[in-house]
Length: 212
Image 1 (cartoon, rainbow, N blue to C red):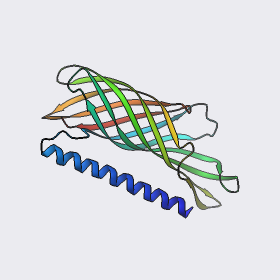
Image 2 (cartoon, one colour):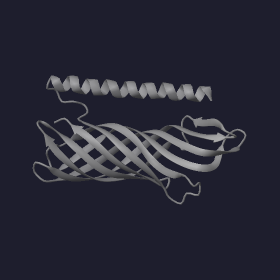
Image 3 (cartoon, helix red, strand yellow):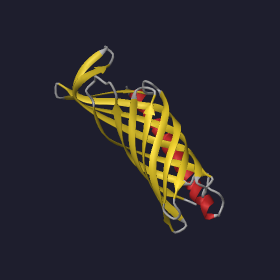
Image 4 (cartoon, rainbow, N blue to C red):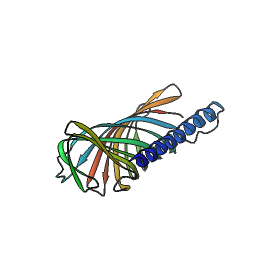
């Protein structure tokens, strides 16, 4: 358990450092009027949808953040790709947790899944100043950590795994949004949906800032 927690902490630090360095690099290059490597930054809220699931988990609101690069602006069709960190959350009033020994029953279980998502999509724009758009694309997820925390006999217990099972996920993505000009840059509000091959979906509402 200590080894798993230490690995997750190290992975989280590396991810945070990586994203911080890229954001700093983006703004430093932008100040020098050089093309930034990433030009769209988002924060988001998400909710997982479990299809044909018998575990009785209730989907809760999670969160995320991402950095993206888009090409062919201001044409009607753009290409957008990037990386985002996501924390998915679910809750179960009472259920089984796979451990060693194999199964333990806990109450008030909170399940967290942490992943890095790598989407690539085409963005279709309509409008002049304020633009509405749709997106269609694919994604690949790396599920690098999951945890289940609940109570048994009034004691708090936590079980975790690095990486999660399954450790990868892929599927299709579709979204609707609006781009609002803001001086030389702009704001983006987008609602999109991920459908994975593992019979799960994710609804995501994101708010972004664009550098042009």
